[in-house]
Length: 245
Image (cartoon, rainbow, N blue to C red; front, side, top):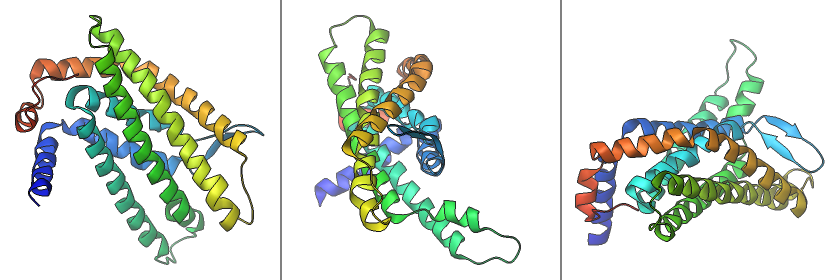
């Protein structure tokens, strides 16, 4: 019980310490990518890309910034918060979609907002697992490259490698769960092969990595500004972690 109280207190201190803009961008990107994923942008025999890739890179960039400054535990905690808020929004969407209206034909509107339960379950599981992978790899690379004096280069390496692995696992886990496990049971036998899941996950990860490469220099400037302004002093004092990796 004492451990639980301390964890709750630590999370409260963390939320007071993390700049609101980053938390907002993180949560909005998680909600948006689940809505945008309803539209397929590219589909061939071997690959498929949905609209979620246009914004999912922002979620991973926020995690990279949080991991660099606050550590992987803090980044994981905020990832769970973002997933929880997304689930709450999905419940509200489902309620709104189930309320009949005579004002107009909202069939398509309701279909998009209501979603499918196993897609929501799969996307949530994939996001949480990939977030832990991304944050853990990012932190580990920071440890391994700590002796390198070029801090910007180290940050970019951490960001690119962790994002590539995290995005790949996010796409791969989601594809496996939806198209190899649930879809054959609930979509009249429709399914993907392991090759299709793997190629789609890799293609999506490369596309999302490209987006992060374009914006990661800005993310590095954000981290340096946080360090200069001593953002998170209360959190570091509470957790007794004075140094950041």
